[in-house]
Amino acid sequence: MKSVDAHLAEILATVRPLAPLELDLEQVLGATLAEDVSSPVPLPPFDNSAMDGYAVRAEDLSEIPVTLPVIDDVAAGSTELRAVGPGHAVRIMTGAPLPAGADTVVPVEWTDGGTVSVRIDRRAEAGNAIRRAGEDVQAGDVVLGAGTVIRPAQLGIIAGVGRRRVLARPRPRVVVLSTGAELVEPGSPLATGQIWESNSYTLTAAVREAGAEGYRAGSVADDPAELLDRLDTHLVRADAIITSGGVSMGAYEPVKEALSPLGTVRFEKVAMQPGMPQGFGVLGDDQVPIFALPGNPVSSFVSFVLFVRPALDKMRGLPSGMPELVTARAAGPLRSPSGRRSFLRGALAPDGTVTPVHGQGSHQLAALAVADALIVVPEEVTEVAAGATVEVIKL
Ligand code: AMP
Ligand code: MG
Image (cartoon, rainbow, N blue to C red; front, side):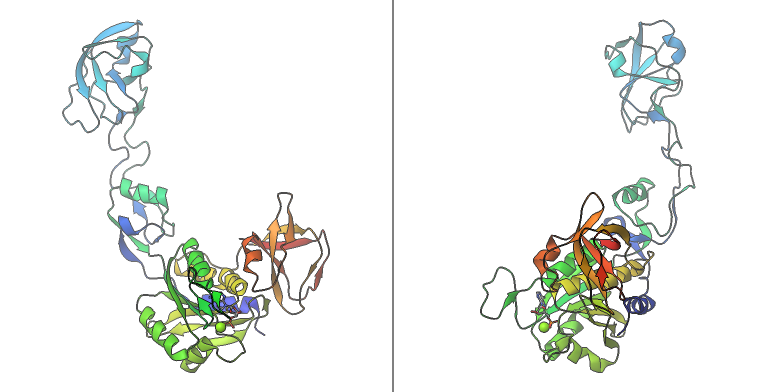
């Protein structure tokens, strides 16, 4: 059997970061920046008021209270500004440019709020409530480096430095297709021998949570020809494909039957539990990676965490490898088969202990749904004593 590490290594050696594209602001959320973004101007671009109030000369506030004539009104966006002479005040709004002559802003709360003249009750020091040009960013400063994932705040600064488009690796488009003659769409009634299809929902959601675009392509019955046809349809718009089911040792294994003859997808046993049968390879002229995951719901989910997610990280141009392991204490004894790495579904407690959830079968989706960790038990370990230190992957 192939080791988990060898399987992941082969996958990571095959998948490549997606080529960067010029992406519009509207499309770039979740993409990975492939250039350094700098600001063409200082930010703020000009000295402006941090508050609603009055722009004055600090020297005119030596005696408090003082009443000054209001000679102008400047709103944010004002372009024609009258200079503030000695003994004058200008009513000013947050974000409005500071008029020449003024060196301080008195917040409206410290005044009577007058519009013809204003009584100022409290002294403001020179520089009060003024946001200086370049205080956030100097012209030419790099505000985001290549390799940064664009989240809301990063999107904000890209817009804030005036860029409409940036060079970025897009979110990988991942098509998810289930196989199985027994599968029925949730919402439709079950007949004898049928189950509701869940893997495509789990996997598409996992794809989205991993920062990629998930397209749920539904399910196909156990017919290799139909499967090939469906894959062909989706190949044009996919950066990666995930299938579930049809890869084990039985008869009617459509994924294995359809893809083995192509010679570009390998089906192997990986020394893990759950999730032993795994297929991986590439399809079509564009060598689109395909992950043929086992059908049992827990197996396909664990396979996603171990193999697909790191591959998506790599496609996004991010550091990729085994999911991060943290240590916990086993709340009770654990058992694991010899020669296979186990990923037991566990619940973490605030005191740092982890308890396996009830129901460790690879079909037991309800147990997975109450777990928040995978307890990793190495290949050579068959028993773990209560209280022993274990490594876990947080879900
Ligand atoms: P397979 O790998 O196709 O032999 O499927 C293994 C087990 O997982 C069988 O019990 C299937 O019914 C079940 N299964 C396969 N695909 C799905 C799916 N998309 N949703 C829920 N269960 C599935
Ligand atoms: Mg099947």
